[in-house]
Image (cartoon, rainbow, N blue to C red; front, side, top):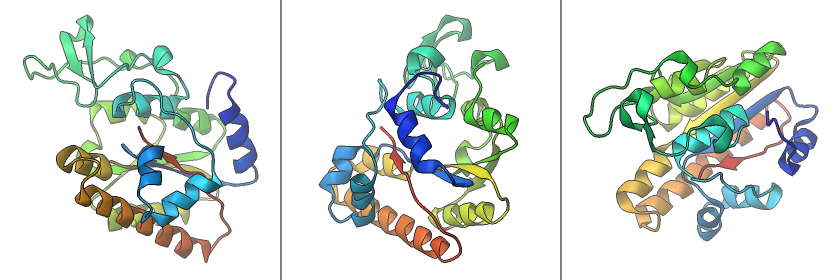
Length: 232
């Protein structure tokens, strides 16, 4: 979906050629160095060997990365430049994920033309390909999700089992599709306990095993290949 030449484009086009169903797994806050450092996350480590390393955009925050992932644009192009951003038209310093004024806590009134860019979902819809987003219940229907996931059929989930169940049901529902599957739990754990903590490392190992189990189960029904992408 990028509007500029990039070696990543060629890599993805070659890797995804011939596949009718694509799941984009976005593990928030999981960088390459963290992935490599946790040898117990065997499946994720194998993905790093199998695929291609892509550097994060700058600044590497959730709001910036999501906006780039869903539009194919750089932060300079789409204008979401940080977790908090001073936008005088919205009343000053505004949180870009929840769209409230940081200084007062009041909700910012955001018009639909604040984020006018076409998303991957909208572009695929023009090609008659269905797009789905699997996102946590607590962020489904927020201003940020509504902006960045235009053109997607949004499916909320509660917990990791529901997450994979939703993806599996979607994959069985249509012949051609793109699924944007977002997991923020690792980011939350790292913020609370620290990325080097035993809790965060254990969470990453469990997530790696869960993804591997899902792919192995689904592969029994259909052939597959995989390209992963981690967050910041």
